[in-house]
Image (tube, rainbow, N blue to C red; front, top):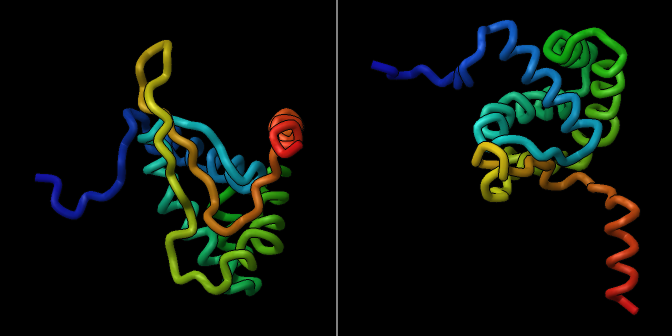
Length: 139
């Protein structure tokens, strides 16, 4: 029986799954919204929300814990800095539920369920192509 077994394995070994979640979290922090499979998005959400909770505390200990969770490479260092300076303050008055998962349908090649995962309160910069479409629609 799987009682109280919360970890989603995603058909990967433990080190592979941990590395994948670290990379997805760094990408989510850096880009504010990422497109991934629904299963990976659902596995990423608790991991990312715990990082935001650490960011809201904003102490040396919480920064070191975030670095230990994300890794010590250059991307992780930038991600921790952005997490504590931009993302956590944007969610300062929210008690939880920092991520939003939007289902997109199925991928064409293998019919995997796809989804966007994004921050609820953080600003998501639009790409230049999307801005041009919005400007053309406005005028």
